[in-house]
Length: 306
Image 1 (cartoon, one colour):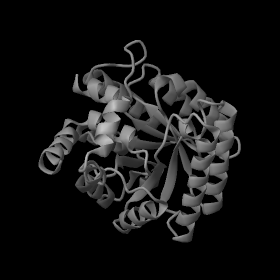
Image 2 (tube, rainbow, N blue to C red; image 1 turned 135 degrees about the vertical axis):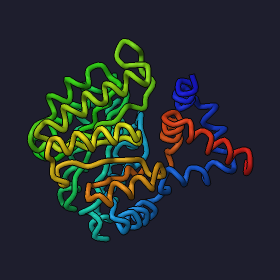
Image 3 (cartoon, helix red, strand yellow; image 1 turned 30 degrees about the vertical axis):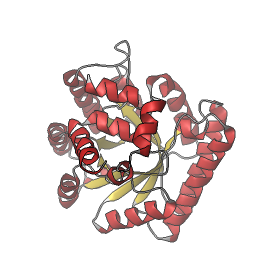
Image 4 (cartoon, rainbow, N blue to C red; image 1 turned 120 degrees about the horizontal axis):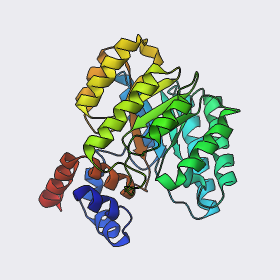
């Protein structure tokens, strides 16, 4: 019930206005968001890299309904990639891109072209791009764009959300040599006709997908904070005889930092998903929906500082 309410709130303009204008909100958001500027993103990247972590940067923004906004987001990514290269961080940091932020809802070809521009900038900087996955209505379009981009940039990463019924089949198609696939549970409100609704069913689907990816020929990116799923992944990785450079774990900025350090200390690659920018509201609501502990943290801050 709480998760459904928060996911609904993520698209409610009235609730958004209240949260965005609450005096404490920006202080709380700093736990989960690097800041609003490229300089903020680069500074956090440098700190995390110094701790032996890898990074995937997301310039926050989605549901773009104006071509000018999509172009601006594309330019922001190009600037970020140039700055990563200038600060010698491109070897440890990549970028994650939502196609909706670069024009998917306006014109699929526009989004593809903008994503290709970002990929070209990433290639110039010496790093990679992962295409974020959003609600189920965009899955086919996103995977189609992925296929087109990989013709020129074979290292472009995909994201599969385990809560969708289709995801095991998608993993089978993507678990090929050179393919990079981030597996997450999923963070959007989806109908029962396309997605598992119970936590247990989602977890079971995650393990099925995980097994396909780890036993496949691609590069699995295990994105979860769930201790049980991490333990299962580590066991499957050992059984598959995978080298440390043939997979990675991923977690969100601000969540389970000690566990991030533990994983990195084992020699495995540990990548932190770091969002930045002004459009943080929808991202924050989805993070709160994923973990009740995040809700408690936010509400305590509102009660004591609001």
